[in-house]
Image 1 (cartoon, rainbow, N blue to C red):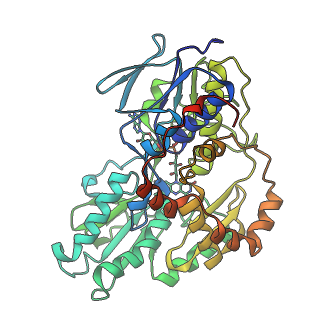
Image 2: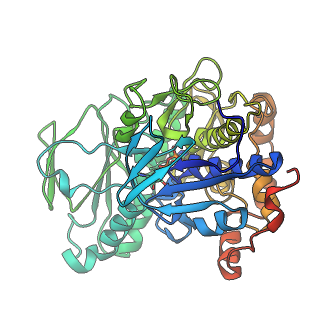
Image 3: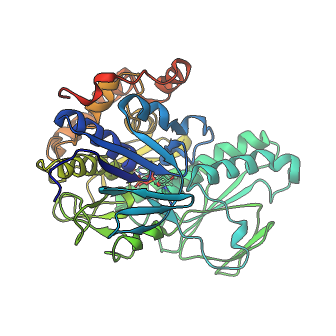
Length: 450
Ligand SMILES: Cc1cc2nc3c(=O)[nH]c(=O)nc-3n(C[C@H](O)[C@H](O)[C@H](O)COP(=O)(O)OP(=O)(O)OC[C@H]3O[C@@H](n4cnc5c(N)ncnc54)[C@H](O)[C@@H]3O)c2cc1C
């Protein structure tokens, strides 16, 4: 193990939730230890994408320029794709060259798996920022391109998990806006399991089913898609639906390049890591976010969610920097788990626990909480204050937020007042930040404590 950090290099592959927080946490730890370590993030985009918002109609606020986050704290960004790795030689192969590392954090995330069926190229998705932009553009152009016929005002969403439900419920109002009420909008949700929201418990599913029924979303369960053209789709039941828009949301798996790092630990292709998030059988590689298979509370594996990716990024960044400097690493744990589902005009649904059936709030309270998550909670501080950015990167204590406290907080009216009372991050701050430009790099960023 390296105990001399002089001139060492920490590389982070990926700049999503796990990658960005890993970089910021490493910068915080570097400053705390007074270490001389270069931090470099490599990813194909110059922005951090707020993936949980890609089902929303307004995408403008779903990305944050990396330079705004990284420049002030001395993190370098290389805009490129990782294509390979030489673990013995300690370098990554990029599309345009090589990148040496002493320690590596793998945070390349996940992607949906499109089905292999006739016409799969006609499917839309909300998986990446580019996919979401293509879908938005397509929806905007529907009336002009295809007129107000029923096939253009019909959207089919395949997969009734979290993303499918949120996409379908949002689609109802998006279609109404697009067609201005002239053509009746039709939204359909297709699920191969016998029930919609198969990962939710029965009470939560009942709330979701009521919301979908109220909005007129048509449901087909125990059904799959067998073929698709640019004007229709065929279901496994033989039903043919005339539509110009089929959105695929199923089969999320860790990015396939994870295989370069180690064998898959689960059917999602994630990497097995120890409690410090270091990849098993590796000395100097950590994994965080959608690529890491780790038990969050000793029992439940982490979900592919930013709820787990954000703290994991902080732990991985802290630990990789600690290892490079011969300092103590921290064990990752996270006892609280909640889900927060957007049900479009019918509000939101918040559940606590891995059974996803203990309903904390729903309706307008659920919606307010979801908006708080999507517009504030998942954003790094964007107030231009370097210290608050580094402070936010501290790995959270796993047991700090007791479930009982959280339950009380969410159930009480305080939830709403704290939602409206928070400031300093989220899109409002993002607008401000854009106007202001990147904060000046702080010369003292590598000394002193955070
Ligand atoms: C529509 C939608 C809604 C969601 N809603 C929620 C929600 O409500 N709550 C929740 O907790 N989670 C939600 N999720 C899941 C959540 O977004 C992911 O779990 C989270 O983004 C994972 O973070 P990550 O950093 O591991 O991966 P990502 O955020 O996917 O980041 C991966 C990074 O790797 C980069 N990358 C890709 N290929 C390469 C390469 N070859 N070389 C280098 N870099 C590369 C990408 O550009 C990106 O920067 C949602 C996801 C989607 C798609």
